[in-house]
Length: 72
Image 1 (spheres, rainbow, N blue to C red):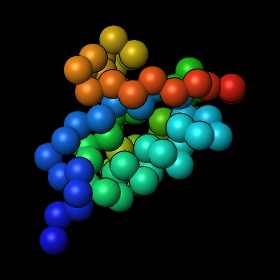
Image 2 (cartoon, rainbow, N blue to C red):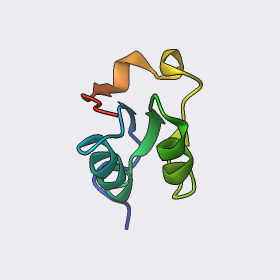
Image 3 (cartoon, rainbow, N blue to C red):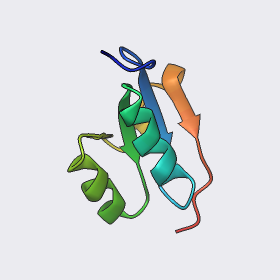
Image 4 (cartoon, one colour):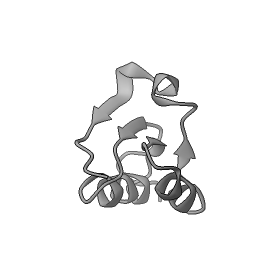
C-alpha cells in the first residue's frame, strides 16, 4: 500500500540535525524527496537510500520546497 505522501515531490535544503531525519521520514511516507546540502557527503549518503540529489539548490521545484535551517 502506498504511503500518505505517494505521488508528491518535496524538496529539502539542509540535511543537518533536523533536515536529514525529516527527509528520511518524508521518503518513508512515500514522497519523492529531492535533497540539497552544502556538504556533499550527506547527499551521497541519502541518495544511496533512494532520495534524489538536486542539481544545485536551483534544481529544486520551488512549488514543493521546504527550506530547513542548516548548521554544517
